[in-house]
Length: 381
Ligand code: MRU
Image (cartoon, rainbow, N blue to C red):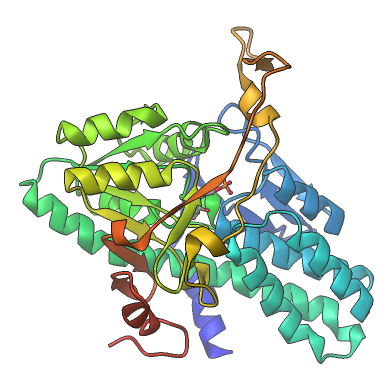
């Protein structure tokens, strides 16, 4: 109770990320109407549109179509989805059905299951009449805690950037990132981008190489948008450029997020992450993974065999969306309709390529025994 209160207070006191100077979270309950609101990420960077999610079907649709995406945000949205379902029908059958529908939206990010289980646990033993309100409180706690967790990740990661900065003699630290692991992928601050925002705020010069991240371009559309709003120097590169930059000595560290990490440290993240890890290993560039502890799936050890990899629609590869010169958004096909397409959305980077994990509980190296020390319930030394 006190912990949640303290986290809430901390979330209020330390304002996070801004768009045109105004603070936004990626998901929130509207203060006057109480309705659930999100930033529609499918419209960025060309349009900044807010959207209301009035019920469970709207939340399911928003997660599936990636209006909200990123492992921690998917979890936060699912928690709210469960609360909305229970507000309409608090029966056991409704809870089970909402769980199934939410779980089916996106299979890879483990935060989805984590958040659904957490909300279910607190309402399961309650009188049905109390379930809706209790679920909503838990969803809000999940959001507030995510903000505090990401801030902590930022602080721990800042120490690493500070160290890189002193090795660079104060020249900008050049960090390569993949996909979007910023505030749009969480509730605020982000995971991989949080240390970068903290470093920038502390006056440490940083420069970010932003992988465009085909096919959905989360790097080009979302990470570049975030960094621009925050005033962090950055350059968008095609996904294939990272290895070349590392060979030229232009990357001081790779810093990515994760959708699910095994208890031994295999990292599942956006497709293409593995290739960056290989190039980093080959070039002696440190490869850091920033993640909340809730992204660790303690039940599995072998990422290659045990993590379900989401296969998304062929259209994401066959079509691209952009802004026409007249300012209208347009989708065009870049492949013939008879071309075969495969679209695995994530890959697994084996633990041996990971230099360190940056979490809210501190930084540690991969490997079961080291990671276990940071497991909830354990007390890191
Ligand atoms: O398919 P997405 O956009 O949901 O994938 C997001 C990522 O892979 C992120 O890197 C990951 O969720 C970490 S987010 C803090």
